[in-house]
Amino acid sequence: MKNYTLLVLLIFIIGCSHNNNEIIPNKQLHYTNNDTPAFLADSMLVEGYFNQFSFLQEDTAYLHLNSKVILKNATLGIYDVNKQLKDYIKCDIIPQKIANTDPYKNGYGYKVSYKYIIPSNLKSGLYFLANNMPFLVKNGSTSKPKIAIVHPSNTDIAYNKNGGMSYYYPSHQNRARVLSKERPWTFSENGNSTSFYQWLGSLPYSFDFLSDEDIEDYNRIKDYQILIFIGHSEYWTRTARLNFDKFINENHHAIMLSGNSMYWQARYDVKTPSQQICYKYDAFTSDPISDILLKTGRWEDARLNLNPLLSIGSNYYTYGGFQNPAKVGFGGYKILKPQNELFKGLNFKYNDVMKFAADEYDGAKLSYVKNPANGADVYPVYDNVATNFYKVQLLAYDLAVPDWGGNDVHSGGLIILKKKATSGVIINVGASNWCKEISKPEIKKITTNAIEILQKSDKELEGLFN
Picture 1 (cartoon, rainbow, N blue to C red):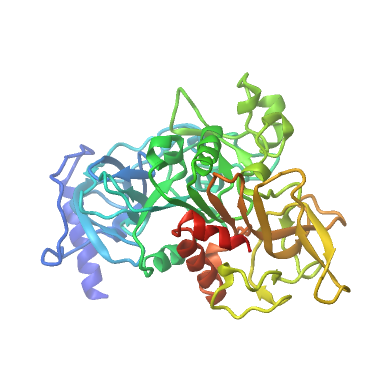
Picture 2 (picture 1 turned 90 degrees about the vertical axis):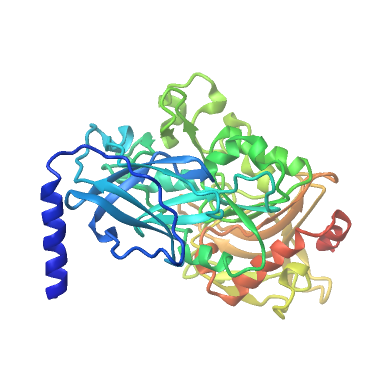
C-alpha cells in the first residue's frame, strides 16, 4: 500500500510538471522480450478509442486517449487476447472531456494522443491497448492464410451505448438511428467472447482477422479459401451481402458460427464514414435515403430483395427465434445425421441432444417425414422447394419461440448447403451463442471438424452430403 501511494504521488508530481494539454508526438517503440518496460501506466487510462477498428500491418492508427491524470511520456502496453504484452507505446496522456453534442452519433471528439504505426511483425489478430481498447490487425502481406476470421464489428457498434444511446438503448422506442465509430469500443452483449479468440490461437491453423467493414472490398476477401463469421453477425451492409454471395458463387466456402445472422441492413454514411446508420423498425418511413434497396430495415423484408434464406440457408424472423426449453424444444440440438463427417469423433446417436445455451436460432422451413428405420416416428428435413439449393441437409435442430412471441413454434438448425453445383459450401450452425459456448467439447469438435472439412478438395466435399 505504501509503495502504491508513492507511485500515485510520483505520477501526480510528473503530471503537475506538465502544465498544458499539448500533445507531444513520440517515436514508436517495438517490444522485445529483452525490452520489458519498468512501469506501465495502463491503470491511468480511463478510456479511449482508435480512428477505426481494423488495421493492416504498417497502417497508422490514431489513438484518442482519456486518462485520470496528466502524465508525460507514459508507457502503455499492447496485449494479445491472452493478456500477453506484445508491444508498447510511449506518449503523453491527459484527461479529456467529450467535446461533441450527441456523442453516440457524433463521436466523443477527443484529441489525438498518439499515432501508432502497426508493426509489420505484429501478427494478425485481436489486441488491446492497456487491456482496455480492442483493435484488429489484419495481414498486410501478399502471402495470406487460407482462412479469415470475420469479427462482427457492425454488431459491436449497434450494441455500444457509450455516449448515451445505441440501437437498443435506452429502449426499442427511444433508440439511435445513427451511431459513431469514434467512441470507446465495446463488444456486443451476446455471442462474442475473448475465450473464443484464445481457443483459436490453440489451433494448428494460420488465420487472418478481418472486421465487417473489410468485407466491403471484394479484393480484400477474394483470395481466401474460407471465411468464418463469428459471434453475433447481425448487421450487414448491402455491399457486404453481395460480396458474400459472390465469394460463395466463386467456389469459396464459409462457416457461420453465428445466429440472428444477416438480420438488419446497416449503411455507412457517405459524407461521414465514421457513422453507421440503421433505422430498423421505421426504415421504410423514416430512413431518408431514396434508394429503397438501401433502406436500413430487416433483411427478410421483401422490398430489400435479399433474404438471408437464399444466402446462408436460414433466417431469424420468419423461421427462427429464441431458445426456450421451458416452453418448447430440447435446450440444444437434437442430432439427425450422427454419421455426418461434421460429427466425426463425437459418437452421437440419432436423437441424441447436444445441450448448449444457444440464445437466438436461425431456422428454415422444415418438412416432416417418416423414419425409414421403423416407419413410425417422424423427423424433420430441410424443405428445399423455395430455396432450390443444389444440395442441402439439416444435421441437427431445436424448436424455438418466435421473436414476436405467441404460440407458434419455430426452429433452429445446423445446416450444410451448396447453392449451385459450382459454388462453395456453407456450414451454418445457426446459433448466436455458439462462440460463447466454446468451452463445451462438442462445440470445439464440430468447429474444428468444419475447418478441416472445408480445406478438402471439391470432390472430397461431395461426401459431406451423403
